[in-house]
Image 1 (cartoon, helix red, strand yellow):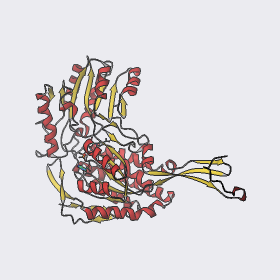
Image 2 (image 1 turned 45 degrees about the vertical axis):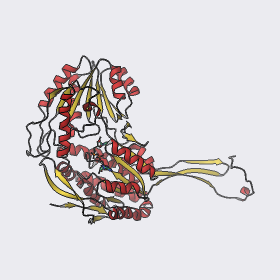
Image 3 (image 1 turned 135 degrees about the vertical axis):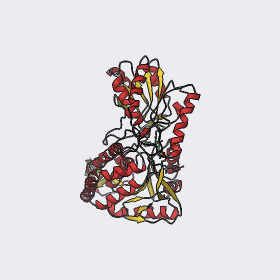
Image 4 (image 1 turned 90 degrees about the vertical axis):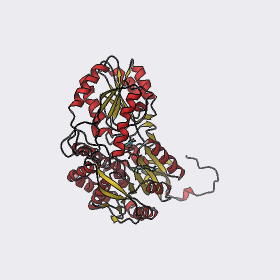
Length: 496
Ligand code: NAD
């Protein structure tokens, strides 16, 4: 059984904290290794390595930084199968889904390669006689990234390729539940030629997170995780004078209008509701059916769910296990609650037959109809393979429901009415909208992020927002002197 160590200054960094956390294989239900959990000295070592590497990396030419980022892209693309296997063994998602996660991460690496263009400043000639003004974008310094368990490769890749390309140095604190992907990517960056100390992995829990939030040498925090922690990160990082973006949880609704193609809707609801066992921040967890479509749609979803193969992610199944036993039990507890609250359990995912070990953290796809909007089944982010149906009478009632949610990450409308779709994109208070697209994760050159309690801060992940977030601007006003510019004048400078 191996121990996963920190990656600091280009090598494994043994821990002396005496604290570790278990890393499970969720499909086997057994601990497969331990991960070290940082103490104060290790936080200090990671930040110090990143700080020491910053001056030389910031001053490394654009040409050289491009070469390294291109090499990383090539290595990642060539060896993505290794990374997918790590994701499946620690997270549990099926291999094809792990490959999809890496593909979306690679997209951001490719977007980051356009940094020479995206970091260009502006130039205005002769703003005043003989005076030019121009702007520069410069890196921040040491940036902290704190990521969740559900995308151990993609979410770090939302941030670090852009942060590094822009000239920053990084301390990544990945989820302690599936930490190996971070070390694998760190080794690959080193192989691509990234200098030691530019990318560091600090493993840990709240101690490590708080250490980064409070460290004066960490200039920004990029966080993705649950809403209560995102809010805590936002407030604490801001109090410590840092730039911060904190992406939180979600409860994503799919609004189905009566004119929609119900076969397409049923396919989409199943794919977006149960892919990755519902452990996606862009998963659809509520189908809002505008009557009279609910009965027919539920029948179509039920038929599709019956065909889903649940089991070990390496065996060609559709859906894998949940991340831990505790999480599996918590998700399953919502099924009892649904019945207590008067909802109808149409498909019960407990006790299903799986293609995997008996001790795996299994829960099959679950469909619940007539969920009261006062029930915690409706209001909580369950983060598992549980799809609720809420029936409404009109489009207006559906939009009002979506807008009353504390979350505003993603949503989708299914309709063949272009006018209704245009109205929806205008009226709905959500950051990412799908029109007949169930998981509207924007491509890498549009930024990713929700509204309301799904994002604290004003910078989204990747896309144009990222270059704003990971750089700060300077405006330079320049005049090359000639004798005509002499003389004393204490008035406020005016342009002429
Ligand atoms: P989490 O909030 O439990 O953990 C996220 C990170 O915060 C981890 O690195 C963890 O170690 C750390 N952390 C946990 N508790 C902490 C505490 N008390 N103080 C300081 N740090 C702490 O989230 P998770 O369970 O790993 O991930 C699932 C959540 O992430 C879901 O809510 C999901 O919606 C959300 N998520 C959101 C997005 C998005 O883009 N909005 C994307 C992916 C996941």
